[in-house]
Image (cartoon, rainbow, N blue to C red; front, side, top):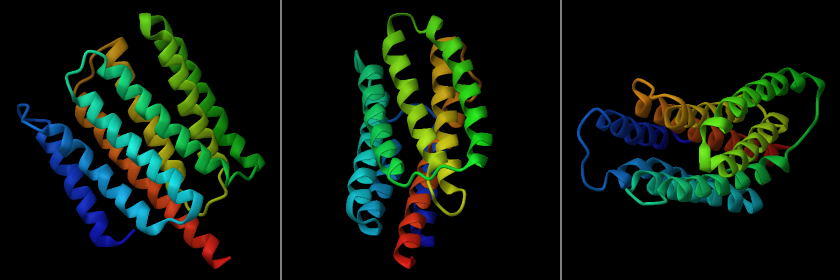
Length: 213
């Protein structure tokens, strides 16, 4: 990703993270989603073919989810959860096309499976009437993380991005269903912005590798 774009992205993300320490302000949901919209524009210009369609779709649904979770809507959490589920489905379809099995990937799949089982054990009893949506979302984000691990890509951006997304969503779920976390907004959004940046950078690197080969 071009250095100026990276600086612009992290400048926007950092400004939103800093704004979390102050009182609410009008149109903060736009501020929250703007860094993701920037990545969407980058994906439109730097990716090609099916990968571009899927990544643009994923980032669009992420931006929509950001807005829906930030707005004070009666069913805002369900709407936001649905938008992010669609985003993870788009990421999964993109990464699945790059799958390449290798035994060493078991070293990453096993701790992921263990972590997700622990989250399942903790969250399902605590989520009450939202058990089915939460269970479905856990399945979808698991598929995204698994396909990211299995993807045949150079570098670690895709793996870091998927891991950070799992961490971000786990923190959000713990904060909502189990117990309030200190600095929850900062922790959730920093890991989220890092996840999005790394996922797109990993996809861009994959596109460059394919062009070379």
